Image 1 (cartoon, rainbow, N blue to C red):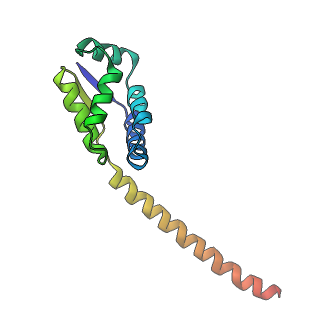
Image 2 (image 1 turned 135 degrees about the vertical axis):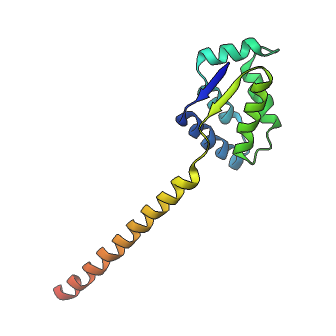
Image 3 (image 1 turned 90 degrees about the vertical axis):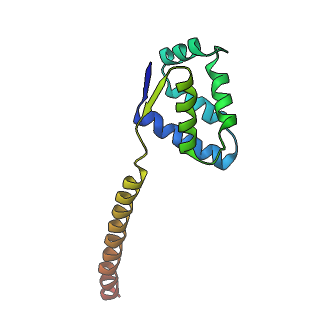
Length: 128
């Protein structure tokens, strides 16, 4: 069986994992990972698990996770689900490209703000 996580789910897990790293608490992360899967997917995973409990499975994965690398968490999920015959697919992280574009946009905005400030200063001087 193959399970595909959409970009929204992957992004939510990454954000939640980053929060878990900062706060040292994985409870919200466990809930967010659980919510990333549909009810049907959870039922199929539980059928394949010895324990039959996806929440317990996630607890074990999070306990095994070092808590410092989000990509490691995804690799653990892939491996553990692969062991029960489920192929986990998700969009790879493209943050580097997104960050570069965001930085360029921020740089452009900063330049515009400076230009506007420069234009306002002489007008203020003339009014005095």
